[in-house]
Image 1 (cartoon, rainbow, N blue to C red):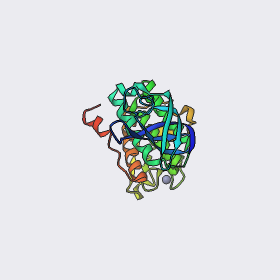
Image 2: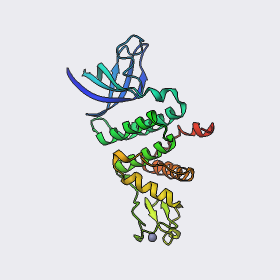
Image 3: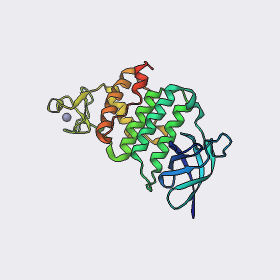
Image 4: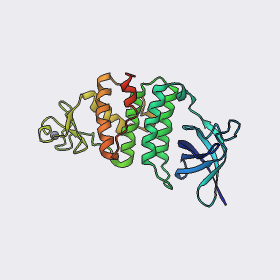
Length: 248
Ligand SMILES: [Zn+2]
């Protein structure tokens, strides 16, 4: 039997019995890991707190014949604040859905883990608009996965003039006013949205969340990201529709 010590955050849980669960951990050292948390549903279990969804902990895991089994977990950051706020929790659930789809077993993704933890931190500990935080996460994640849109100028003719700029879903980047008529997939965007897209793709990770936007820019970012996510990851993420349906 071998053991593994790793930091990680629980991104999914499945009940497997009266007292047991299997949790999916986004780990620092091995990417996605499935691990049995035996007895963790019992209130007095020493695993009960640290194996909850969205809990970031230091784990010691044992590898049996098939999957890992959690021996101990020491909580580093439980993100408790998310659990008391339906809007922030729904945004966290949405970004966690995306994370579940893009990370793989035995593929450490430390930069993606850092982005995910930073995003949860801003969502839970600050008053920043959850909508904007989620838009930043989505686009930066896609960029890290190799789907960064071209935002340095017009992808067709190279013009850096932002007047009349559009976002082309077909070409994955900006097209200028002169090139737009030849691209049916292009959506006209404001200069503010163009600047926000540029910032999200290029900012240092430490500065990523340090900007604000107008409601109009936020609305355009929402339309762009939803379609861009759907086309790149081939999945329509719908958890946030619930918030829209109750006007939150
Ligand atoms: Zn052009």
